[in-house]
Length: 321
Ligand SMILES: Nc1nc2c(c(=O)[nH]1)N[C@H]1C(S)=C(S)[C@@H](COP(=O)(O)O)O[C@H]1N2
Ligand SMILES: [Mo]
Image 1 (cartoon, rainbow, N blue to C red):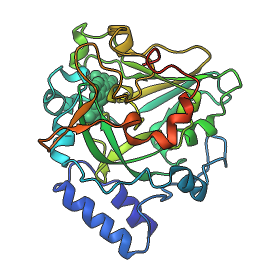
Image 2: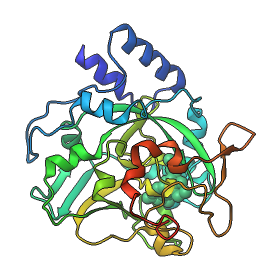
Image 3: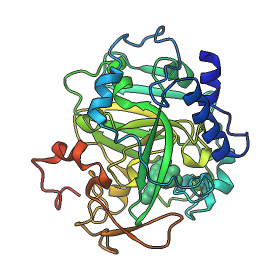
């Protein structure tokens, strides 16, 4: 049984009819009496990871109070995988889907370093064998005012953090995308300062809504969406969701992030979705859900305010945008 579930949770991206597969999989899980969340994928043993400390499913469920699910219509697989931002493969929204096939996602090494007791170069599959892959349905809201609702598969970043044991000096987590112009031809042009980098404050990184995604719609993450490992922080603008991560560093000082380096007046470190703080060149008050015509009002923290507003209670969000 476990094998069947495992296979259904990680259907190779080469297979067809994604929405159907996805819905069938949900039916299967329901028939088998298994919730679509909280499935253990691998043995939580081995290598240099600390054991235990995985978030307790019941505690997490009460912390999230249903925010990892939604009744809103899902954005079609077609839109989620053909309307992308991934400048390593071109600056047009359709470029990543056309060009990202040159990215090789296995074997894949994630280097963990900095203020941490168990640094190392971890093989991604070993790493995945030590975490619980869950399904979470989260909105992605981009700074250009488009949004999507996406069924992601992934695991809580905090479960990885617990296993590598940051020291008390770690106050931020910094992420780095692969830098390889042979695989990522967009990196031959100096549009951005490569490699792409992002960061979170430790409490943001430890929040149960923050996941490292490995798939969507029940399939392995398509390359254009950031295979094999990308960050998803549902209350923040899309640019926080760094793709194709090869390094996770624990640091004392606020790390740089690419869009802030590029245009500091337009993109801050925090990037919390905030309808009251306009981007200098456009309003952030409304958004267009991909697949819909009428614009909708943008919600503070992308609708996740009840779970995350406390993280910023002491901050002026107009200054820390
Ligand atoms: N490495 C890398 N990560 C990235 C980007 C990028 O250009 N390079 N673009 C960001 C931006 S601006 C957005 S809106 C989201 C888009 O994610 P999606 O294509 O899966 O919708 O990815 C983010 N992650
Ligand atoms: Mo974006």
